[in-house]
Structure formats: structure tokens, C-alpha cells
Image 1 (cartoon, rainbow, N blue to C red):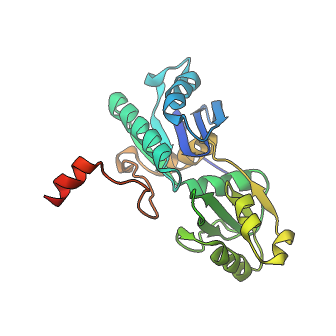
Image 2: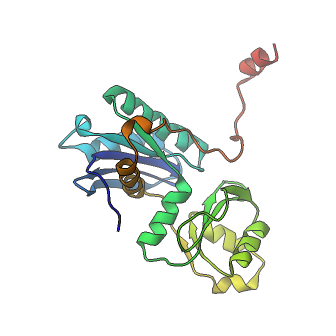
Length: 235
């Protein structure tokens, strides 16, 4: 049974192919906005945040929570910057929640049991991956791996439920014919899960011990400094 204190939390998520905001208040998800999108997170996120806090307003918040990836570099920057800005303006802590943990929570909330392998989109040929045991303890650190390594991980577990936003792409690439017997669930991240996980953590961790969120990059982003900046760096 999940137990929490009774904070009011605004949660933001723009780490994948969706944008969402949710408000945790009175021990439940009080309001939520969610929209699938590949781009446009910067324009959509703050209007969603304003929508979900209508009533008590931003001044009623005890905490801002935000997904920290791994995920889309631009979306992560947008959401984390927005969360930090709100935290600074309101004088409240900001908590980061890992996207792999968000997907594990979503799967459990939908009744998935047994080992879970979370596969998230990298927008390349490989995948972000983390495996969790039946007890939800991570079986390894988050990694970036190719389809062959994902197949090896599944085989080593003796089977697992595959969840995340990259599941179908992996299945299309996989060569192991036994994978058609594996339970798989394509799911997009949701700020409601971020809020729920943050409420649990907030009940266990004093506000003063919450460290500012940092994006979880499992490899360098697909960007480079502008030419003028590169020239300055060389100088």
C-alpha cells in the first residue's frame, strides 16, 4: 500500500513523445492534462501547468516534480527548466523522478506482475533500457543498448513484460522468434505517475534533503555548440 504525507505537488513530464502536467492534492491526482506530441512541448507545457493548478494556484504548491529522463534532450531541458523556475519563484523544492521508474510504475499500476524490462526511445537504432525484478528492485543500472543486447537481457530473465514507448520498434527489429510469446505494452509517460512517485518520496524525505533535478543523460546529446562558441572553446 502506498503511503504519503499530504503535499500539494505539480508534476511535469516532457521527456518523450507526449507532454503532460498533473496535480497531486489531498492524497490523489486532482487534475491532469496529457497530449501526445513529438514537438511543441515548450509551447504546451506551461499552459497545461496553469490548467491543472487552477483553484489553489501555484502558491498552494509544496513541491514541483519533473521527469529527468532518459528521454528526448529538448523535452528534458524544457521541463526541468520550467520546474526549476517555478521552484525558485515559489521558494519550494523541486524533485526529479527518473523516466524508467515512471514506466515501471505505470506498468504495475496497470496490473503487470513479474520482471519488467522498460524500453524507451532514443530516436536512434538503440534503446534506453532498465530491468526490474518482481519486487521492483532494479536488476542493473540504466543503459543504452542495441536490439541484440535487449534480446539477451530478456533471455537472461527467463522472460519479462516489455513496457515503454520503444517496445514496438524493438519487436520489429528483433530476430528471436520466441519474442512473439513475450507480453508487451506500449505506453507513453505521464506526469500523473511522476506526481504519485514524488508524493511517496516526499513523505520519506525532508524537503531540505531534496536535491535539484539534473537530467539523466546516458550519452551526450545530439547537439554541438554554434561555430562561434566552438571557436571560443578552441581559443
